[in-house]
Length: 233
Length: 288
Ligand SMILES: Nc1ncnc2c1ncn2[C@@H]1O[C@H](COP(=O)(O)OP(=O)(O)OP(=O)(O)O)[C@@H](O)[C@H]1O
Ligand SMILES: [Mg+2]
Image 1 (cartoon, helix red, strand yellow):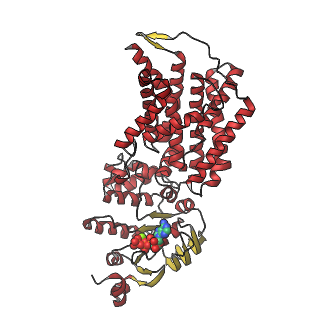
Image 2 (cartoon, chains in turn cyan, yellow):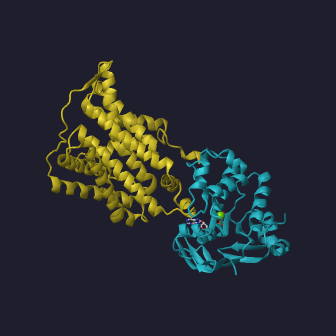
Image 3 (tube, chains in turn green, purple):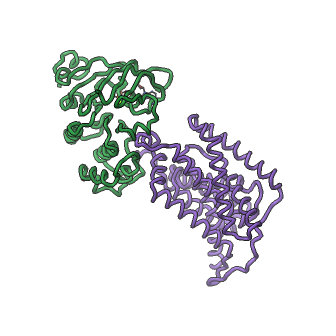
């Protein structure tokens, strides 16, 4: 059974629908890349899944439980980790406070130690204000914060967008190893070819719905996907 | 020289009153996202509760505690009955509602206690002399009460899990929610803190001057000035700015006269904002 199911999801920020019927399913340990042009509704889909979209209809199901209208904070504690596209750390909190503040964590101390071991750069700066971190460090902190609860599903909204090209590979490798450990990953990426290379499946969004979807290799090889969305390099 | 030091001390005590009120304003603004015009009247609540309980018990300390308790209760009631219901609307709705809450509190106090001034009836004590500087014992009591309140508030804010959650919600409410934090619970704690802080400021003001239904409302403008001067949403800044304004006012009084000392506070505010638009401690938006 899928960990996360999205069925005929519609909704938006006001009366206008941004999502026009999205269907997705995600298994444990699977990476699903969501690609698509600017304004296709990728971030809006992420917000609907984590509970930040003001108006939704359709269904979001986590582990067989309908969470479509569950409060955001309960979803977070119940196993959804989320790294927003922008504003993804608490700038006035210290680095370690950004992790400590997360609710719904079993054995908080041990978890923070694990994450600091995974991100040594953050451990070195743990008393610094998160607002003074570099773009790359900030992204690591956002990722670590999202992993605090050992979530079953992680939603990453363009995690590599703020990174220097040299750091992109590392970042995607971390995502891949997260999935190897059994976490389901919804990976929204502009660098669609690189993201698909580490993904099991992909979906391309256009106008608030899924325009194409399939196995990652199939999409990578697809001429039409390349022409319309992914580019040829 | 000695009289100069005395002016500075007076400035610090009156500045602490403004600073505490500004701290309460900044806490509410940072987390509930509106300027609470009932801040001054929550001060008045504290002063009246303290006067009444002190008349009954004879203990000033008990008065402060009772005042703080009353402030907490009134702030929580205002939150539960009014502000929580408006949270989803535009901030100006809550601002307008807080003006209404302010009027209701003031009217209730007027009906219950009348409009004549009350005093704490603290024993008149001769000022102490320390190196030629006269120190009023009541000023010392006021400074101690303020310092204790600040210590409690800053310990809660910066050294407890609930304080961390409050700062997280102040930073970014959505990110707090996706981190599993319930803003509703944080809001309750914040209102309790803000109400308690207001009330202690009111008790201090009442002990220094007189207690009347309008006493708190009159402090609202100086408190707003200190909030802005300190950098909106910055707790330390609010307190420092309050003290700074208090001291500047007192030092300047011999030169500009009593009538203009309030105007002077706003002149200082204007000057600082010209140089630092985000206030003394605020981060300019460009840094984000
Ligand atoms: N907070 C908001 N309020 C109102 N409309 C919004 C909001 N955020 C996004 N939109 C609109 O929703 C549509 C989809 O935006 P969304 O951010 O989901 O796109 P995206 O696929 O994530 O694009 P990008 O690649 O630029 O991140 C756009 O038309 C956008 O203008
Ligand atoms: Mg987006």
